[in-house]
Length: 91
Ligand SMILES: [Zn+2]
Image (cartoon, rainbow, N blue to C red; front, top):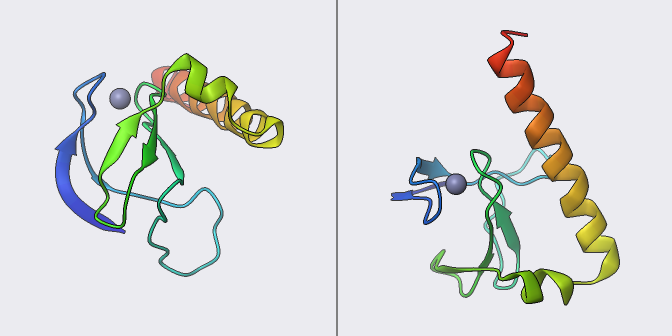
């Protein structure tokens, strides 16, 4: 899903697209409450409404997420770090 270009509030990389972690083959708009991760720095944000506004999740916010979701986010973080490592090694 394309969005207006915006900079990650943490790493300042410019991003212009949102992808679902679950490949359904369909373009899916995020719902309020959905979590998004910056693939450059791992920053977690939560969509606050249907206009793609979002807020940065604090450590307390993350700790308050359901355990299964925290586990899923941890796996995404591991995959993100592995992809960055592979990229830096030219794999
Ligand atoms: Zn970032």
